[in-house]
Structure formats: C-alpha cells, structure tokens
Amino acid sequence: MIDTHAHLNDSQFDSDRDQVIRKAFQSGVQKIIEIADGPMEWGNALALCRKYPNQIFCAWGFHPHHALEWQDNYLSDLGKNLDSPLIAAIGEIGIDYAKSQAPVHIQHRTFRKMVELSNGAGKPLVLHCRNGKENGDAFKDMFHILQKYWKPKLGSRKFHGVLHCFSGGMTEAREALSLRLALGVDGPVTYPKNEELRSTLVSVGLDRIVLETDSPFLPPQGKRGQRNDPSQVTEIAQRLSSLFNVSKEEVVSVTTRNALELFNLC
Ligand SMILES: [Zn+2]
Ligand SMILES: [Zn+2]
Image (cartoon, rainbow, N blue to C red; front, top):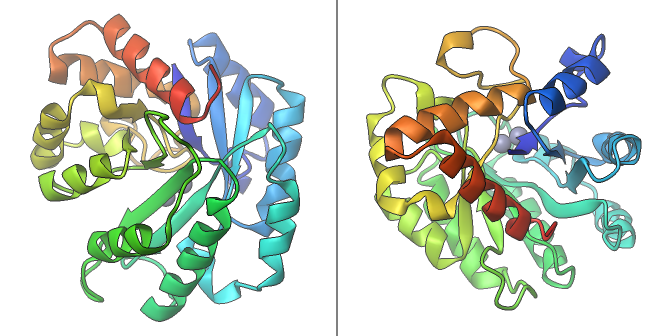
C-alpha cells in the first residue's frame, strides 16, 4: 500500500513521529508521500525523505489556506529544487472555499502561478479542491484554471496528477479523468453519509483511484475524533474492497500500481 497523502511534519506528530512511521511500514505501507503545504515545511519534508530513503517521498506546494502569505520569490526557491528525485510532485495546491481566509482572486492567482511553474517541471500535481457555502463552485474554477494554464510535460503517462481527498460527484470525476487526474480516496469514503461519493467511485473504477490518509486529519469512521496516521490506509483499502466487491489484495495491487505510476516511482 502507498499512502499518497500525509502530513507527517504536522506538530501533532512531534512526540512520536518515528514510531508512527515505523508502525505504518509494519502494517504494510510501502511508501508514503509527505505533503509540504508551504515554504515553512519544504525543508522538513525533504529531511524526512532523506531519513527514510525510498520509503518516503515528498510533494512541495502552496496550500490555498496560505494564499495570503504568498511571495513571488517562492517560485524561484521552488524551481531551484524541483530536479530533486525526492520531490515526487508539486502540491498540494488548489482552491478552498470552505476554510481558506484568502479572497477568491488571491487563491486563483497563487494557484495559477504554481500551475504555470509546474509546466516546465515534468512532475505531477497534487490538487486540493473544496467547496464551501459561498464563493461559487471551487471545482469549476479549478478545472477552468487547469484547462487554461496547465501544460504538463508528462507525455503519455497514465496520470498527470491527483485530485486528493476527492469530494465531488460524477460531473467532477469525469472532468478530472479527462485531465488525467487520479482520484485520492481517504477517510470520508468510510463515513455513513457519503453514499454519493461511494457510488461515484464505483462508476469511476479502481483503476483511477489511489489510497491516502491525509494524516493527521480525516480518520476513518471507527477513529473519528482521533489523530489519523498512515497505518489507517489499510482501513481505506478494506472499505474499497467491500465497495468494489473484490479482495483487499486486489484493491492494494491496483491502487499501489496507480500510485507508483502517478509519482513515477516504478
Ligand atoms: Zn488537502
Ligand atoms: Zn493535505
């Protein structure tokens, strides 16, 4: 199994980070993609990759939550480092109308700058997209910016990015697939109310899905209210196994292959 989205540098792991990581590897996780949300986390993410070679890789991005702190010099700092084989992707980047304090036009501008930076980099994107009660349709806005400004140099690769913690419906899923985006599936697939998400995933097929935890956030149903950790990716695999009516081994095999292709770790 590969946890394609974790925030192991979150302060919630300060007291037992290495134990959490070891527990994940013991429970069958082979690799983890550590997501760095902004410049303050980029160095720590790289340090984690060096500490766990070939097991932890990272993504460097700029989360929409931080959009108000954007500085243009981040682009050159990021650009200088993107050749590193330890940086498997650019992200998470995107649009958030639920929690980000940043006005819509600021979010769009930083997202667009990151998308344009990625065009020359030959690395996939890790995308975050969340609808809120106002500001319009975050998915529509994200897809619009991608269609207009994103020119990935990833050739015929099966995936050019991932829409992590996918929360859309069939319309959004179709749009994502047409842009060669995998769908990241995590804790919410286990929540009773998310029937629509589950039926959308079944229509999409396992072949386009990668597993993630978004640790320390979004624990699966049985652990709600607790800190999430990458070993919980087994719970997601288990839920998909009953959802798709296939063995857990089949879920693991297909989603691991997808993740390896997505991040070019084959
Ligand atoms: Zn996110
Ligand atoms: Zn995240």
